Image (tube, rainbow, N blue to C red):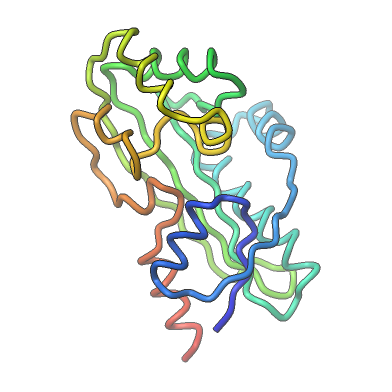
Length: 194
């Protein structure tokens, strides 16, 4: 069974490939910043923002490919119930790491599957992460190992790479933190096939 992944995330595509889920990537081109700002102005919390973005991406692509299953996904960081966005520069990335330094935050990953332009399933997973106390110098060294392109596309830490060294603990599913709660997606697809 082939699905469409409505995301340009290379990591999400790799996770689907690892579990042998046949997928085609068709990017939704949803203006995430505009939607986040709109939802924040309405008082939405980070979890609602993540769910809404996953659903919007999924439905937008599903409208163009009505007979296919379309998977939309979004991940956000919640720190003291404040939304932390992906950095737009290296300076911003460093500020984010300094803010998260020596404290607990949550990574929220939402997924939505749509068909015929309507959501048929969604799921949100929340992981708790506690960052170690790390000097500014070490944080800068860590960021210097990450290409600007990767940093701006995937955020301030890549737990699939050197990002693990930043944390005291991670309570949650690693693949969900990387962007896809894959076990839940597989369970749904297997039920859908029946």
